[in-house]
Each structure stands twice: as C-alpha cells, then as structure tokens.
Length: 546
Image 1 (cartoon, rainbow, N blue to C red):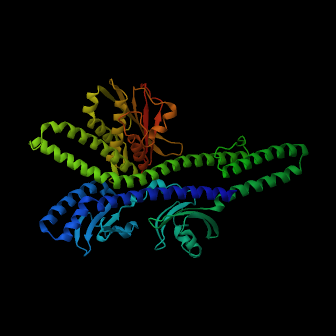
Image 2 (image 1 turned 120 degrees about the vertical axis):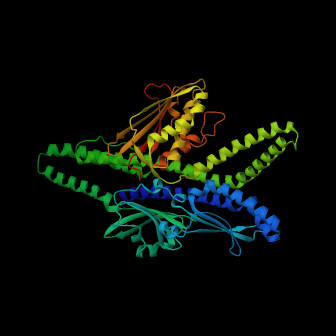
C-alpha cells in the first residue's frame, strides 16, 4: 500500500514537471518557426541563390526588420540567436555571447536546419542558445515528495544530469541513479513512462520517470521508501506492545480498546485503499490523542496535499495544451497576420498621401483595427504559454504599485474612477520582475474600473503577514464597487479564454495568475473587501523569493 502511494505521488510529480518542459519546448519550436519559416527569410535565401545584389540588400533589410521584431518578443528566453547560410556565413544574429552559458547552465545549443518550403532543401541554419527559464520553471520542479525527495532532468543522449532540485543535496542525488541500476534499465526508461527501484546508501528509493521525444530528456521524481514505511512500522510495533500489556491486565479493558483500535485501523486501511483507487476524499476515523489519531491526522493532511497538487496538475495540463496550440497558432496565423497588417498600413499611407481615394480610409482603418485586436489575442496566447520575464532583481513593492496607478491615471479619470490607496508595507522589498508585476497590477486595476461603467471607487491596499510556518508574505488587494463575482465562478475566472465581457479575450486574469506563480505566489478572488461592495482580488507574494 505504501509503495503504491509513493509510486502514485512520484508519478504525479514527474508528469507535472514533464508537462511543463514539453509546454515550454513547444514555445521554443514556435519561436523556431517564427525565425525561419517566414516570408522574409524565405525571400532572402531565394535572392541569395539568384545573386542579384540589389535584390539581396532589399531582402536582407526586410528580413532583419522582421527578425528584430520577433526577437523583441522571444529574446528574453534566449542568450543568442543566429542565422547562417550553407557556407557558415552569418546572415543575422541577436543577443549576447552564449559561449559561457552552455556549460554554466547545462543546456545544449539548439541547431535547427532551415529549409526552402518549396524545394524542401536545407539552405540555412538557425542556432539558438536558450536560457534555463525557456525550458523549465522553478514551480514545476520545486515540489518534492518527502524530505529525501528530488526532481531531475537527464539528457538521454549523453546520460548527463542537466537539472536537479534536491532537498538533501550532498547526501543523495540524481547522479546516484547513473550507476549500475541506470545502465541496467536505461533501455527501458528511454521510452514512455514508468517507475524503477534502486538502492543508494542501503536505502531503497522509488523513481518515477517520463521520457520525452523532443527534447530527448528524461524527467524523474524520486524519494526514499523507508521515509514513509517507517512511521507505519512504528505504529504497528506500538500496537503489538500495547496488545501484550493489555493481555496481562483486565480482559474487559482489553476487549474495549482492541475493538476501538481495530475499527479505527480498518477505517484507515479502507481509506488508504480508496486513495490507491483514485478517491482522494475518503472517510477517515475521528482524530484522537493516540498514535492512530496522529496517523489519521497525517493521512488526512497527505490526501489534502495530493488533492491540491492534482488541481495544479490539471491547470498545468491545460497550459501544456495551450502551448501546443500556441505553436500552431504562431505558424498558421502570426505570419499571415503580420503580412496583412503591413499591407493595410501601406494602403493607409497611400490614402493619406492622396495616391488612393479618401473614401477607402474608413474600411482600411476598420480592418487594421480588427487585425490589431486579433494580434492582441495571439500575443496573449503566446505570453500565457511562455514566461517572458526579464530576470529577477530587488525592488520596492510600493513603487511598482504607484507606477501602475500612475500609468492608468488618465484612463481611470476618463471613466470617473477614483483610486483609494491604503498601505502598511511602504518599505517592503521583493526580488522579482517589477515589469511583469506592474503589468499584472494594471490588469487588475483595469478590470476593477471596467466593472463600474458609470464610475466609482477602486481600493488598493497592501499589508504584510506571517504564515503559520513562519514564512513572511505581502498581500495586495484590489477591490471595487461593481457587481462582484459569483461564488461558483471565482475559480473559473482564472481559466484561459473565460470572460464575461463580449469584447474581452479571457486572457488577462490567466496571465496575472501565471505572473503571480512565477514569483512564488498566487491570486485569490474573494467575495468582497472591507469598505467595498464588489469583487476583491488578492495577490499574495512571499517576501523570501530568491
């Protein structure tokens, strides 16, 4: 039973981490398509083949402008990007020198051939040096099962550990797996997913793995069997000792106690079997002050954590599907959308210069506005599927909030919305990406203003607190006097594409949730806040983020 629970939990963690890696690698593939399979780059190598220097200069300039636009969006995920022809001559490059990052970050350089879409022959090569955040996140690999648990990524092609998060670093690690046990099971673990058992320092460990096709990595989660089996063994020895004492005492007390203990253990056993079959809310015996009650409390806490993790896994699966959709969206929609936008802008310039009749300006302007709106939706999907932070640094939280309010002041005044500030953490400093957090707060402020079309108030308050485990947090609450959010919709509002407005995209709160999670925090939609009648969104961020 204990082994089955450990296998289920490590498998859940491994699949969650693998889904995150696959999600982010799909975004990398999307970036490769944007940088290689586009009209400007295809035109450049065709002009290079023809040899017309004038046409080559024009095509090179157009390709460079397009690639720089793409780099502004995708650049934060990579150290460098470079296009070279078949002779190795550099045609375009961006970013800083990636030579020192390959070893330091443990990430391979991605070399992708660029093909002529008409003849399917290789005409160029695209080289990308990814940053670690382009392929994994702390959130996906931070959770571990037990004190001795760790998660890791192993490169199948080189049998090299390229990422490891280990709560007992120096005692046991993923490198212990690359020994006799690994060589014996390497052929099996290179395909699909499963679980293996191995021994390190006389301790039996369980490792669940997921083998990815692209990239050729194995994502695994491991923990020690003895760590979880020992408490059950101690409880069993205690019961036997207690039984021996009771046999020598009064028979009536023996019958009463054994009957009670047996019922509790039977209920706990049935609960464990139910969990093994997938029921994460089993009926548990009432908690008492004895060992069985303590075990029941621990079991209840464990099932609660598993339920919470399963909900997070479901969100991760949705984001993984969204990542695959984003890659296809970039290939099928982004390029023609960009070309359409450029053509409409060209027509608009010709109309304003008098080359085309003025009567054409209205439909062209309307079409350009709709193209921009569609481009906003596409960018929102790509941003949701990809972390686009510029790196974490120290900053003052109140300055970020003030910047967000100031940036929206004119828009809020136009809507007759008054912002009321209340803060108790003026000098609070965090480590994170202030630009991402400012965008998140502006998104919440705009939502609060739009909930009051006739004008009203928006409250912004911040306060620090200490959790039960001693960790320090800061809570930023943005409240309004709008109609509020129904109780059954307070979790739904964070799902991608969920919106109650006819002109909304349904991506704003999903992006806000992604930003909060990237900073180790979360967002909750509350019924209301003190002094306000409408919805209240509370962003909780840990002060110990590193």
